[in-house]
Image (cartoon, rainbow, N blue to C red; front, side, top):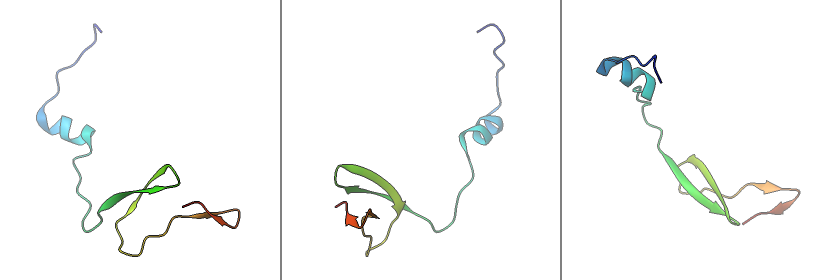
Length: 55
């Protein structure tokens, strides 16, 4: 912890991901106990694996 460097606010913003992505909102969906992060949609359906829906 000796080599710490003090960063300016603009440097911290770059590290923290200060970019904005226009128009895309993400929601969390629960599918059979698994949480899925996906673009928000009114018609979201849980993924199908092995021919069996997991929801």
